Image (tube, rainbow, N blue to C red):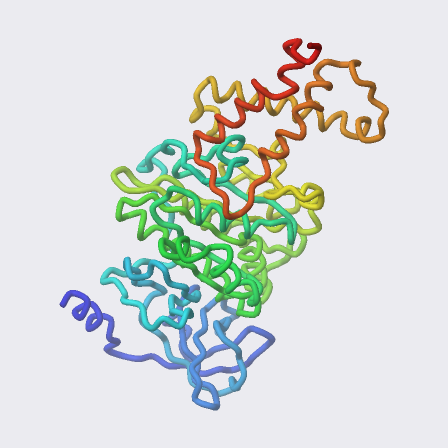
Length: 450
């Protein structure tokens, strides 16, 4: 009954209309309705073939409103009727969305029929919770990936970035976290993905078990910039819905860079001046507004633990979007092509990755264990060229000798097949076993001379 009442309340009592006065590229110029709309207003254009094209207001030029479409503009011409949609950009999520795949408008695209909506609307572009009302980050969350659990530990409510070039394994790492983490719910946003890879990700990488406790939002690379941007906001809105129900949510987004590219397209079409690498000022305004929505919830509610991938162009980890996102998030996971090329997956560079909450959430014993392992890895990295060329002579430096002995066991520890799961405590136990009972440890204690 309450749902029916809300539906009745949303029925428009009056309609306002305007006309298309011009089309320039992806921009549609509208007139006759400017006094009743503002930035972000939603309208609908009726094409020559009576197709409905939803648009959003992105700017104004004198008396003309500038709109961008959510769909193709074929059939739109001068004089086409435009009607104002009274409804705000909202979504009505419910628990029935679990196990489903939807587009940026919240419409099911998995062929399983309609989705039962909830009764309460949620704004697609809601603001983050006030800083003073938020909880602190919680205890460690088990991600199921040895390298992350042990060396880049993540807390509940923490936001981490996964920085990598194309084809290095970001999507596979996300699928491992979605399948193996102990979060209650996973909300996965595939922003600007290749259409071919979506079904592969859902069926092969995520699997039935992962999908059963997930909601997947998809906006492929061929869709409009507005659809790609809205898919990112819908992903956070769904995560907030489950968070407000007191659940621990894992929010996975691939990728933030494509969200930034979509915002750049919108900004350039609206007349914004390009700045660094063509990105407009609103890109760097929208990034924190999006990413700050993840994190610890208000007191008495759940948390949103966020993992956001960043596609670094040309493997440049200091390009503008990567640099901006790194300053917003609570840590970064760096994946490198050179590690992937030698066959170790996930291709995480432990020495360049950092979790800002890790020292406080670990015990002293765990911190000492990680610090010792990193010391040997760093020593080996510094001497790697000399070792490979044969210029280093065994016995010249005990630390280098030990790092050579530990290199293969640590590399094997960091590698993990996507179907494998390593619980949080098991990772530290295996690392301790390597450092205390391996051949290098025996040599350091003098056991290698017997």
